[in-house]
Length: 289
Image (cartoon, rainbow, N blue to C red; front, side):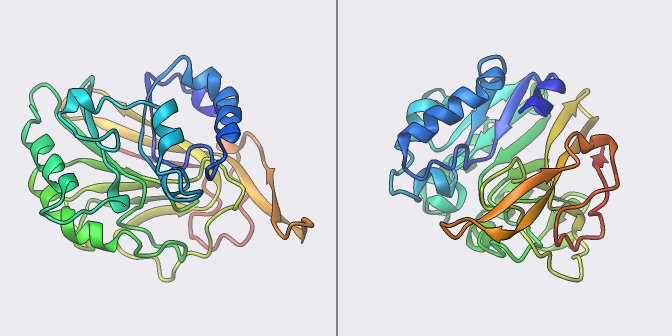
């Protein structure tokens, strides 16, 4: 949170699993207090994750009560999906794999109508965010987004969507522009940024070999900054905040304890998280235009 604040963002996109409360409302309140320096000063858009909607069986009630979305102004029937114009960027938030995704579903129809409304003169950049990634080369949650990708990827491709932000996998991974697992200059760049920190630790191992569509992957804690300069030029930069290591012993409850090391590591390329087998594990910064 402090690292994000130091970047002086104008807005924050949070891709689900915000508090890891798993149905315990007081934990949501503790999370809100911890995040107040950021959330009280920076406009933010969130989407629902599995720990918000299904773990604890709360069906996203706590999330909806604390982090409202502009769904009514988006002609949406549910807070789980919305659109919002943010400067030169048109943001579409979706429930993704936590709602039906087929062509006859409410989510697909909302997405199709939202994309058709985009005015590329006013908002030349189109960004979609949903929790479960379509492209992920980690063993954890591998191919969990398969059906949603099969159902919706061609639609996003046909409208020239620029970026997709995801979480769920506790790591960072950026793809090349990709469509149907092939590098395609007209495809979408997918950015999995599920590495803000959690009690489960980093998602490892990575699958080998690294797919051709995967440009960068690392299992440290960090955050990213998207800077849109004009209608044709934007850049994204991920910065590592800390490497993560697991202690040899577990707690009495059976949980492995994870500790940070190399705190403040954006300028330090000499650490990597425990058991990270990625080729980029010692890289502290990833930048792409």
